[in-house]
Length: 328
Image 1 (cartoon, rainbow, N blue to C red):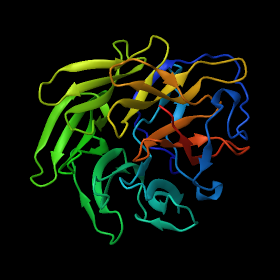
Image 2: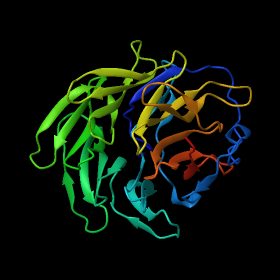
Image 3: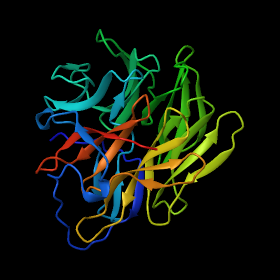
Image 4: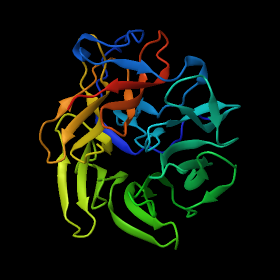
């Protein structure tokens, strides 16, 4: 039987309670703590939108999830890329943000895990799983079916993120139980290793890498900033009770958006929500509070809204693509 998700996990977060599971009312579009936020749904239940693996490790009893982004927004804000299940494969789809039911399927009979648009919006870099190995490929965002393979080592390489100038890709490479950030020049194919970490994101000026690292005890994700030229490293976000991953930088380069764990409450289990923090490490703010998982966030080009995958708005807890307004 074909597995529903890629087996590779990028992060382990805090220990999960073994108490009886709480029931979540997924049918709610929002909860009282999210007052003032408008939510708009951008996919339909029947599309079978693919979402990241999120589960409790049977041995460690930790909440774990696949942290690389499963949706992407074109730089002009016109196109939305996501993964949908079709004929037992996970293929790359594109639809217009402006609305309508038209969907363009860009890959066929592939198992896509994550993706990123090039700065000019003409290309999409994505990760494909074959067996237990993952590699990075590029396809034209609008036409043709030719796919260019970018990585081909014996290690899993995933989570591509374009540099702001579009000339290179940053990505995560797994070596054993550890992850490292690499860069590949798209003209020369020269590859360079930078630092330990995963889920790379670039500040708009291209000078800093934002990455996720597991804490010293390996139980929580932390967000770090690495100056590419100087090699200096700065811890932006760490918490003794919560884990964080999937960093995305606002278009202005001043706010960090990420996924983080939220502790179990009276009426909800521990789950994943969206958070923001200033790039200087101050002003941590929880954005979402729904009992379902909110993951894979992406900024709109103007920084006034956030697209993400969420379990809300339907009884079954199916994932769909949602947009929420953001007021800094």
